[in-house]
Image 1 (cartoon, rainbow over the protein chains, first blue to last red):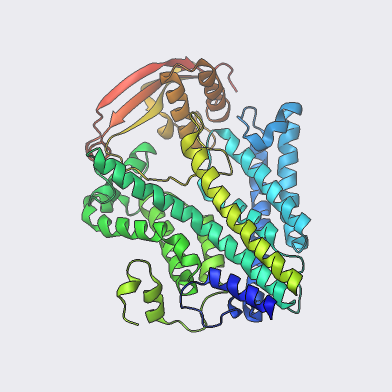
Image 2 (tube, chains in turn blue, yellow):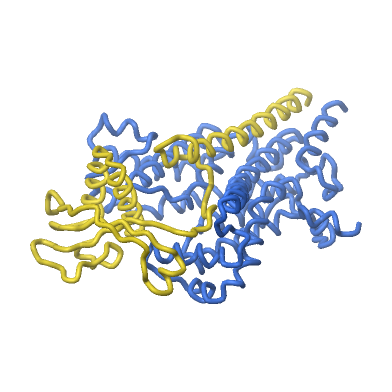
Amino acid sequence: MRAQTRVESIAAFFCPGSTDPDGAGYLTRPDRYVTARTLVQAYYAILFFLAAGSLYAWSGYLKSTELIPRWPLFWFRFVDLELGIHLVLWFHLLGGIVGLTLCKHRWARIVVFVSLLEYLAFKFSFGSINHGDHLGILVSFMLIFLPVGWSSSPPPDRATRAATLLAFSATQGMIMLTYSMSGLWKIWAIFSQTVQGEVSALAPSALARQIAEKLVSSDTTSLLGPWLIDHYWLGWPLMIGTLYLEFFALWSVTRPSLHRVFGLGLILLHLSTHLTLNVIFVQNSLWLALFFVFSPFNPDRFDWRQTLRDLPLIGRWIPG
Amino acid sequence: MSLHSISLRQIRSRLVVVLIVYFIAGTASQRLVPGVDEIFPFFGWSLFSNVPNESSRYTILIEEHNGQAIDPPVVFLKAPETIVTGNRNIGRKVINKLGRAKTRDRKGKVKRYRRLLESNYLQGRVRYELVYERYDPLEKWKTGESIELTSLGRFETKVAK
């Protein structure tokens, strides 16, 4: 009885809204557990796909003669460069295979994380970091915390199901934390630029300026960017929508009715930045689809009133 | 069951701590450590935060390739594949870092970024001019006009590949 109370209190922590009528079922329902398990397994399958897909780049990487190694490659100073690159590339592929076949073991998930850390550190040692790759490694770190027995079939005992869904929820938290951090800096920049008398993100021309700067600095164009620069006033609601989605992304983690809405909203944001700024975050869209659009915590029945009520700032004005 | 529940609480605490640590370390790695762009895999996620009222960039103008003059000189991003190789977008970022190091007179960093640029993104014997440009993004997009265009010097790749 006491144990049940604890599970319930933890469930309440992750579900402060009135969305979920299940109480403790939020973290223990077998169908949710099965969905989470399947999604995590899909995640490791995708990592293998990405590792195998990177094989085409090996020949180019192996020709490298000069790089500025990131800290995880500190050991490069002790080995021949070509040998070091070989080791990183093979370890990445091995990590993909280990994740695909042995992800039920914590040590295997640690191997996957380290292999990604090494590979991405290598990939980012040519003078620039691609932030579109970050979420993949952060998710792999969070999934290390899955409990023993998380992948068992049939579904394990109640406590293991709860621990699995808790780790899954925390992984969702990590994903949305990155968006909220991005939103936080944008809000901060609005204050600092307004104080300095500059055009800020609240100005109608803000998005047009961002697009023009990106296209000029990379000497390129985009499908919708030039059109949006000419019709800059259309960019204003997009900019406000971006600020809202990003800043409150973390809020959505504890409100299951918002998982699909925020997941799809952020995927649309990535599509629009691709079409306007030529900034591509394809992997992020994939992780958002897996962890939010198909979230195991999605309500059984979509209740748009509940979804509206759970929205930050706006929700309080929606009648109950 | 009771033991499981206790560990569940511990898991929750650990996971929350992980998120807090990432927030602090990510913010610090991008914003608080002078001269460091970020400490991978930590990142502050400040992307497109400031609206560019005025912008600047560095670029290189390629003037000569394998002893042959290129007239007019061609910018890095528009140069033919016989001269520029690899991922141009990353090469562009290396040029920006090289330019910043040159402006700040950081000789060690200039040497490192030149080696990185010339080994990975240029091929053959290349003579190029490093240029600093300041502009209003909207004006630059519409008219091509810059506010300032300054040469930071001319360089030549050390060894032809």
